[in-house]
Image (cartoon, rainbow, N blue to C red; front, side, top):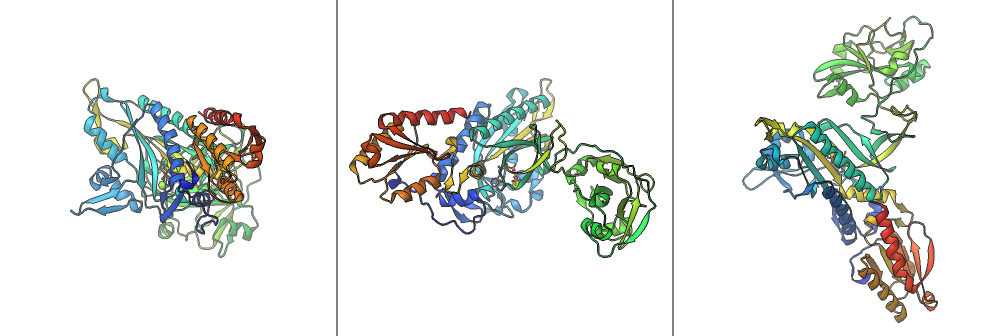
Length: 572
Ligand code: ATP
Ligand code: MG
């Protein structure tokens, strides 16, 4: 591609509303432009990157035996009513009516549609397993669209859905996708972690998220500093360890704690360390009130209490419910004399002489002890993991890092097939629900995450595999006939060898061209100038290291071809 014929509108200034580096650089490098909040147009350079990511994903999906389809993006409400999600999905679902006043939505995901397709055709176990995927534009009316392609409202997703007859088969399909995802993110040149995740709203048996590690990530990732164990905060296991404190038990003492609403307030007022205070949270688990005790310096993990109780919904009790259940106002609940079932985080069992709420306005109790003053129905891991906690797998300890969720895989089980009657006849002629899995990758988010991980103060540094071009040839002075001829010759040779080249033949100052080349992040740059030509040399510069070398003209094309091939082959 000749730059002079291309559409590559780079910007000198950083657009004001871009907060994270990938968003800034994608706008400045002319990869995309904004149409409305969370809605972007892909410009030629950006589209090349998007296509590269898509192709890596497509190759790996095909290799894993998945088959590409393309489903409709406008979906009828009836399907969502069948699955029960029309009422449940909320405002993220963009709904509208057609001219006949029928309800439709823009697809935010395609479980309903794919289940409808499969149930229409699949009747027998002989037709399974099957895994169908697509590369498609989704719409989710996100509350806070931000960070450009990272959290858009309109975005491209690869979504795959597997259908199996047995649990074993479904696990096998899941495993294949898991391996394919590792290959994909590695091939994209990303540093990522696969984390054990909570399957949350979609429901189902298990799930993993693929997190690209980056400071600007919106998710917290707990990972071991020694081994591969990683999980999101929802799921990270906190192992039960400690020794019961040996201090002699004190008498229970009532203390007045006026206007002390938080653990920090109480700690300051009573000169206690927060880890001697125990918070009593009253929660409603499927309409049943229970109390949960958590050490003052720890955080309750709602997913863990939900799993422990096997509840569908767990919420914090309202102020009125708390008054009714404890006799005291919000902020002063405590386990002593409480009539509710009490669950406690493991850490609580090692404490002596704790401070708890007195179930009375502005009253706390000190010197409170387990068994003597209150009983716990069950101890369990109920808090969020923190940096420094011990790894459950090895002797390492947890780090707390930020990550960008680029992929998510779920074993769905029969949630959709049961609701939508997607069944098959087994070998004995008996009808069974098909066992499903679903697997998503954000294509634009992956490209953005790659930029978050690969940039410097001058611009993007694309990994070769997803770079819009492998090489840029910068003509120092395109009016110099010798420079023009040598550049075009190299350009032709490289293109013939299958290398993707951008030829900067613009009539601009060399400094401006170098700046643009750095900004758009092409991995290799060849500079062709009159001075070098006189000595029979081209200058080759690597974007990442900045290293320059002078190469004999005759050898340049071959050197580049082998560098590009090496960079591509090394990854996947
Ligand atoms: P998040 O928690 O970030 O909202 P999600 O759990 O809603 O993600 P999934 O429904 O699992 O996401 O979608 C699969 C993949 O699609 C995600 O892993 C992510 O890469 C991508 N994705 C989801 N929402 C967006 C968005 N608003 N913009 C860009 N990509 C997205
Ligand atoms: Mg979401």
